[in-house]
Image: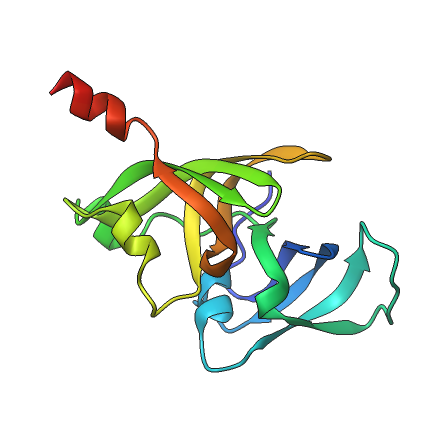
Length: 171
């Protein structure tokens, strides 16, 4: 089992509209992949040691800078950090959601403020990328499960809270 890397380098798999890129993301100590994707005003993400696992274009294997707008979602291959203190103290709750992202069905948990709505969270403008936990992804040419996935909110075609309608019907 891999140990969590608190900083330095993070192994990631970037799913874009044009293919999948495996690589290493250099991040500051105590920073998260999510912070790197949402941070600053930069429109590009630099990946070290990139390896294209789908598509037909080629590039140098040293580093690659990717337009964030082309990213569908990012899978963190290095195990994510432990649950934050805020989540452990009950300030957040998990809401099961189903998202349609390009050709993929993505089902997982979105963490929202207790009593909050995952659909309202999707409408927030302050963060382009949102985290999901305990995720399953099914597409026409691949499927996988992952403990953590960062989704580009602007690539979500449709969303629904799973089990929400059932809960309302039972009330």
